[in-house]
Image (cartoon, rainbow, N blue to C red; front, side):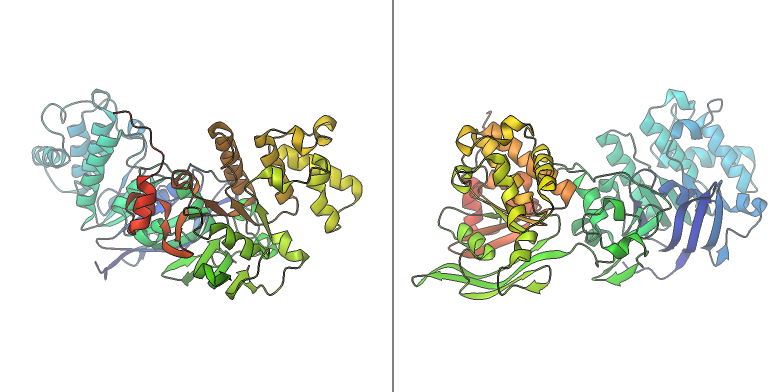
Length: 558
């Protein structure tokens, strides 16, 4: 659908309450027949945006809110009252506080009609009843008081009230919050029908509602728009770290990876990028300079890094052993903070791929780029950026060294920190991987550790240099299911807090499904299928992927 008629334009809008900036430099356009969804955490400024457009903001606003090229921030209160409820309508979030408890639903809608139209009460009452019927309420429900209606029925009444004067702009502030799924579906269908001829701004933290109703999505964080673009593009392939965090935290039936949160809490009035205290790929400039909202790749992003960064890129990578191609012209990109799982049976080339990346064997052809730099040799700084977690912890750890020595060894080799500082770093790493940091544990040898403890020590050792990439080669295949679950949860928690990118190698597609953002299926050295984890596991296109899924672990209850 093409939108040609600009009804509402928001230009350089700033809103503050008690000298605290809530909205900063907001620029948005909504046209006839278009729904713009504004998503973000509580406190991002979403409701303040809706209230400002409706002329109900209690704070101080600058910039412009243009309705039909008329700045609503500059008109009188009397004129705003004429516009609000007739040309621009707002459906509030809290139905209980919006509907008057002493008047019936019909009486309240009748009053709204008479306030904006030269109409007698009888005619207005008939029109009110028609509007309620269109919203799914009639007869006894239309004659009820608010407390006699369910939450969904109250929401229908508010929608009927907002639409009764046929407004050109409809503002929806969390219209499906706290509704059960069936009622939410009915309300969403009603809103979709109502939005077809109007300019709509949908304020919501409910991403499924945004996906169903919106043409365009604006992601709001700390009062600023950090990502803006077509709804399908932004929600299917988020490019700002915050947008990805929102989607990772949202439960829905297409989610296969375990839910992950966003470290830290939102803060306002910070210098630089508003998301930088919580961002795991921030630069020094992010702390001082506000990124501009710049059009790139079909959407606008406010990020000094240009969005989520690729940290590892493999181009036409091949490895031949004795005339046998173990890896064949492989192309892969791993992004900051994501888990990309390489899935395939034994002998498919997965471990050879890991060893080639780490320089334990040389590539026959192809290129490896680490953070945009082509790797020609493995120097010390290479291993500060990327580490490998081996499959068997007992073979990966020297039995002549204690736990303390094993974890401290990478710091010793690279001469990082003073001796006392290195010991403190070891204790901190042990705590981070949920192991004891007391003297007794520090002086244990690998043979004195359980399998789960040994693997955690391997992970702590891998983290000692603060890499941004972990290659995990079957890191839980030798562990029982309970310990495996704990190790996987640990890795996901580390990814969340450190922003780790993980290349997770496994033969277990059921496990990969639970931890991956993306899956790459490897057969005979080639990637035969790659994509978002839910698409690969729900609708596999390649026969080999279908075979792996057919053999995946299942507990059949019937």
